[in-house]
Length: 332
Image (cartoon, rainbow, N blue to C red; front, top):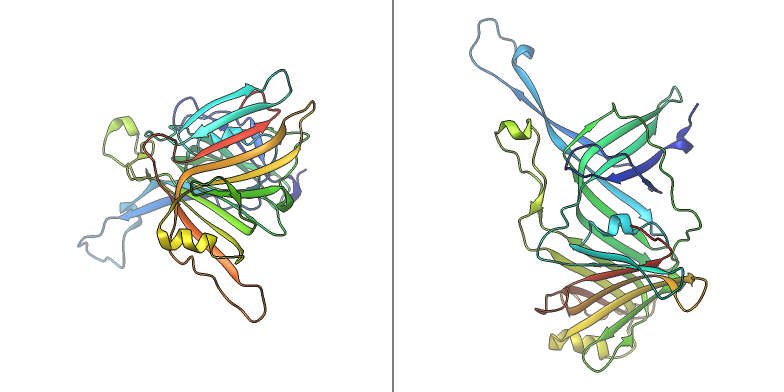
């Protein structure tokens, strides 16, 4: 017998797009937004005695599926998803002769080219666990968000090829010995050329749109009526917002001058025994411009705020965005 407390989210990396891969890891999803999308195609023409569209002329086509995985980022186990969020991945590589391993994920010209088999396991009113499997799930966009007083949260948007309920429920589990990143473990630095300076924030958001074309539907026998794997068809974008207190004119001057800055957001967890490494998630964007409404906001019931919406640009040599993940994971 199962209850709603047994509901879970799991995924596994596919060797071939849209071909089932047994899930190998569970993520502690905060909700369930996974939906199969279908399109009804009725044929309507003149016909004696017609009262409406005839059911014998109706075709139903599977258009795909979509879903968002929202979860608290943990100090272990995130590498399996990070590899599909940028473009290129190296590691995990052992750091010295310690238990620490680092994986590095960077933007690249090509899209990641990685797809997953996702299982959203739901419990029905008869206390039976039902596995809904979504094949060919590709990351299309994502967001990291953190604010005082909360935990670091990731929202990963997927596009999937199709769905079924015929696969057996997998039994992947979440990483053991993992912890979340709380607001006391986040630090932000801004470097406009004179050295990195910390900017104290009450909230930070980093968003990415990978520019993926998800409607690759073609009339051909090879696709079996299903869409082809999403591919990059637009310029990807990396944006975000920092919100802190208005301490002086330093950040506002960067906004008005259009100065390009290096922004680094680091989450530092507990020490990995032995020293000198810690569990860490680090996002580096070396060429960012503050844009939009970066004007200080005065108030009669709060300290004046300094919002800093920004956009990352490619400087021609360094990756536009790099995510480094240090943990004890020896594999993604």
